[in-house]
Amino acid sequence: MDLQHYRNFIAIVEEGSLTAASRKIHVAQPALSNQLKAFEKEFGTQLMKRGSRKLELTDTGQILYKKAQHLCELESSVYKEVADCVSGAAGTLRLGLTPSNAATFFEGLLLAFHRQNPDICYELHEVVSNEIIDLLQNGVIEIGIVRTPFQVSSQFEVLHTKEDPMVAVYHKNSAWFNGAGDSLSIVQLKDVPLCVIRRFEPMISDACFQAGFAPNYICVNTQLITNLMWARQGIGAAIVPLSSLEDFNHESLCCKQIEDASLHTRRAVVTVKNRYLSAVAQNFLNLCKKQMN
Image (cartoon, rainbow, N blue to C red; front, side):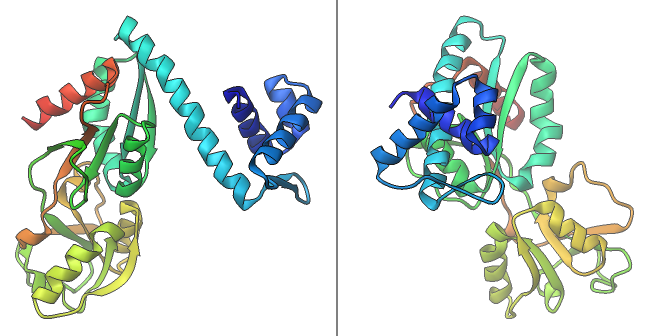
C-alpha cells in the first residue's frame, strides 16, 4: 500500500470526515472514500463508523491509525537523516523523555543545546520509560532520556549521570516532620500520606518494608507536577528525585532529603547500539557526554 494512502487515512481520522480531509489535503472526496474502502477490504474489517457528528474509529481502526503514524514518521525520518548528512547545522532532534524529567531537562541540557543550535527543530515524546524504549526500538526517536530503575537489553548504549537522592516535599505548615533536621530517615515516612510517581512506587515500597512498615500512599501517578500539587495543598508529601526540583520554587513548600541509598536514582541517556544517528542527534549526544563529565 502506498504510504500516501496512510497519510490520507490519518487526515480522515484527524479531520473527522471525508469532506474536511478532502479540503485539507486537496484529494477528491471519492478518491478518499475508495482508499478507505480498499483499506477495509485489505484488512478485512471495518475501520471507521459514522458517529453522531463525525466519523469515529473502531478498535481495529485505532490500531491502524497508530501504526500509520509510526510508518509516516519513519518515512519522514529517512529524509531528515539524509538532509542532516548534507548540512549538519539544521534538522530535527527526535527525543523521548519521561514526564518527571521534562521540565528540568528543558531548563538544562535542552535549552543549552537550543542556544547553541537555534535552527534545530524538536520532536519530543514525553512518555513513560517503557514507551521510550519501544520508540527507540522502532526508530521513531533517536535518543531517550529516562531515569533508573529501568530495564534495557544489550542492544542499547546507556550513559548515566551521577546518583540523585530522593526528597520529601511537603507544605511548610504540615506537622509530619516537626523536629526533623535537614534530612529524614525512611522510618520518618511512616504514617505520612505519600504521593509518588508510579515507576518509583516499587523501590519506595521495598525501602519502607525493609524499615518495618507499609507505606501510606494517597496518590500514585505518572506526573511529577501532580504530586507537587498534592504537596502544595498540604494533603501529602511528594517523594521525588532531588534534581527534578532544580528549577522549581514555591514558597509554601519545604524539602528534606531522604537518607536511604536504596532510593537513589540516576538519569540515563539511551541510544540503540550501532544504529545510525543523525548529525543533530550526535551533536546532542556529545553535549550530554560533555555535561556528564
